Image (cartoon, rainbow, N blue to C red):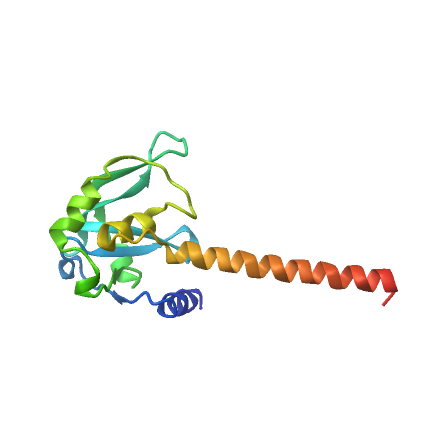
Length: 171
């Protein structure tokens, strides 16, 4: 059910993707993602090369392994076999006239290697991948999270008002 909800959210925000069944189906400069964090959030990366049917060389935003909340852009090999098997590896579709060519995507990604000023809402891994691909500094998942938080907050405030009115008037 949760995956359906995520698919619904993405399909209704103008973000189109295809499910990848083999790392060999990916090309240099592709923007891909897979589920992480309890299957709700997605990690976004730029593909540099396929190294077989389950291993990719990618460039992405990652948390530094030093235990602090510091982030950086790095190149590394990633085994995506589990994500291929569970159907959570997606490649995003871009209109050719609305994105950079693959060499430019990689050049843009490599220009960001090093320290990354991470912000879950304003500068996350999806912002990075979309900026590399088409110069748009956007994150669909951040926008969805903000909308959901506002909806929950509005509902909570409404409930508190109703309860306060009932208590005040003894209803």
